[in-house]
Image 1 (cartoon, rainbow, N blue to C red):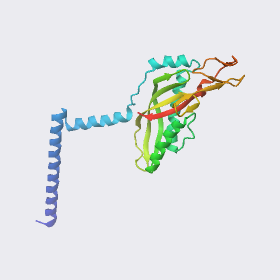
Image 2 (image 1 turned 180 degrees about the vertical axis):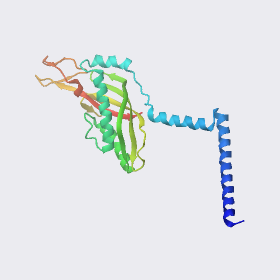
Image 3 (image 1 turned 135 degrees about the horizontal axis):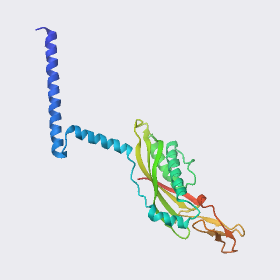
Image 4 (image 1 turned 135 degrees about the vertical axis):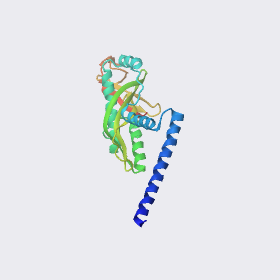
Length: 247
């Protein structure tokens, strides 16, 4: 028997042994999955694959309680539309994500110091790990109000937003082929003056006649309590982005 033939026989034996071992392991795994999951290995693999696909394509669930809070919000701010609030929340989300990616809060309009601090904290955390966080190709699925509170001089509305984007960390991850499904909560607060001790926002008007401060919630015509002059506000300019959180 020639050396070449001996070598071929040895290779064939090794191949048969490996093939037999693989088939044995597959058989054992198949038996285990059928015993505990009620399905074979191929069905289990298909199920896992389907779950992974759904994870990248199914929008995240959000809390939308518009039936409860929308009427109250519209009662307090009749000069605003609900769609305008949604637009403001969606725009705030996009600018916050862009700010994190560009490592700057300069593009986030009407933001409180508290919101900027939240964004800076995330940027600093990424910088500490020498990473740049990316949110590419942002696509918003749906948005809704999840909470609303108001007093005589303040108002706060939470909006939850379900969206997808290509989310990854430059310097750590490869650019994913599929989008990531995410959800976030954006809080809009009515006011311009941030009070550190009360953690609330109050919007004050100045009477065009006597200059005295006039406080209100909502876009109604108000009267100065000192001289009686009517004062009207541009409501949408009074709302600030005060908080952001992934959920």
